[in-house]
Image: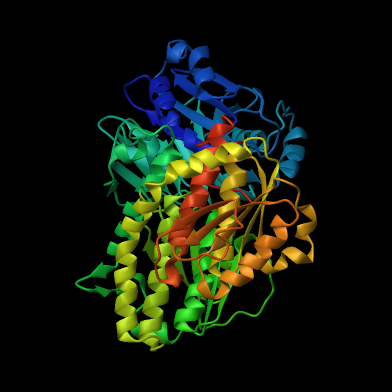
Length: 610
């Protein structure tokens, strides 16, 4: 799983592959490799570690010439990170070479069958079994297309394969199932990639592949086939976002740049549905009648998207009075609970490719539940398969730890809550208009917080050698505490736990040690004193109290060790402000620890495996 690139044209493939894969480094990876088809010979170079190691090894492409090739950055699933487990992988006689994202679930059975036909295996990967199965089919069918169609009928799991066939110089083949793959077309050259950012420097003309599509590249020619091998037509699309959006823009890390872009992401996401003084969700398949008929909402997501959904649960229930269940996608898909046929399933995913979330959405659809996807990537699998789509306008997010995409998801959820409430008559017109005005003020309030970011840099230094931390909150503040805790653990590697503040006394408080960071979020006025009491229980056991609170909250002004105030807003929208200091805190602790903020270990941007 991670970055894939294929190229055929007139230029040196290794140069294109190295440059394009560098654009995908943000996705996280542990090894890199490429294969170039030069006439009737396939040359391979790969290694554990960063692309820079590979680039130095082949002298920036000078030692692996040819105008047709494939490249890969790997995030290990089967087999430890190593030179031999790195992609590409090849058949015994090098007639088929491939790179792969995803997981081949039945690779053991495939290996056993191939072993009985004389195949040997050199790696620990599931990918090798699939490559050799394709080779096995190819030797019988004598055709790449027939070999691929036959092989995919036997491969179980999720995958995106990009392949070279030694006997077909100048051609690159690909197939996808539940893993992203796009094709690009230029003048006399063609591309395949797992992410559009890898080819944006070369072309803006792209095709979005559907599930089970097979693709053939020749120089300047892209052809598509269905799983049975029949030709199919696809429409060419143009990528409109600015390539500079994927550059650091003077910031040390993409993550800090994206933290600063949250005000713009909030403004643009709201602006995408607010026209002529009103919110319009008709394009999202939610007219007034559809909204009135919703009896239940299931919000399904993973990671930070789940945390955005947790905020939405509180906001939608309070404003629109509709019962909401927030579900982890990886659990929802294996539940056997009764589903309300008049429900709406809101599917949240930054990439639109999250494997568990995609599977959960398909389950909801199979049960007759209408689905609405909140995604950031145009043409992604979830976006294409959902009944309706709400695109967030975060732009390309490069850092593995999400910030601006999360903030844009919050705005999408606020919009749904407000409009559902207005249509169902659970809030007044005046309050509805005041909520709109308050959302429009959020961008300037986010920038206000960022003006004080150096205060958090100073306090972060105190926790460079910390081992554990607690994040506490109630209601919306608990949902924010979960996201703040995740940011801390995923980029600084400091073990952090979020806890509903009232639950501390039921076990977790036994873990409090002297000097331990205990971060509390306090933006809900009716809960100030309750959270304050829970925080003081931690302080009495030696905890260092860090408080993020709305201006005017003085509940812990004398007892807390550090207080960061955020501007006041309507309490339904406080998550958009209180999360910013927690993002910054995690960032500054990671920087102080001299860690790779944008590419934390063991993580990937788009989680396309289960």
